[in-house]
Image 1 (spheres, rainbow, N blue to C red):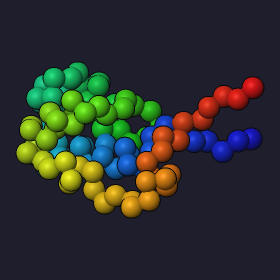
Image 2 (spheres, one colour):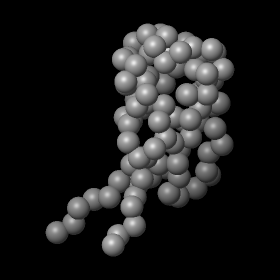
Image 3 (cartoon, rainbow, N blue to C red):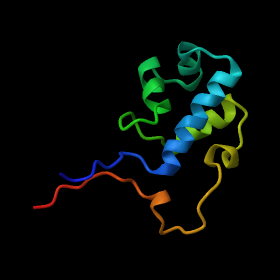
Length: 98
């Protein structure tokens, strides 16, 4: 049986965790955090999860997070791998081959 691949790269997983921590540090409930970002509570739950489901994060959402939580993009990205060809930047989604 093939090894199960993750949907998100380590970079995305880290950002999702930091988004959740920003909301918790600000003292916002899921409902309040979702309202501030203009998404539903379910969407915010999907954004903040680092499990193998949930939604991807787009640039517009990152911009809103930067403004709402007064966070720097550098802090959101965290420590980056200097090798741009490493798996750190790669979505690990399994592709079907015939």
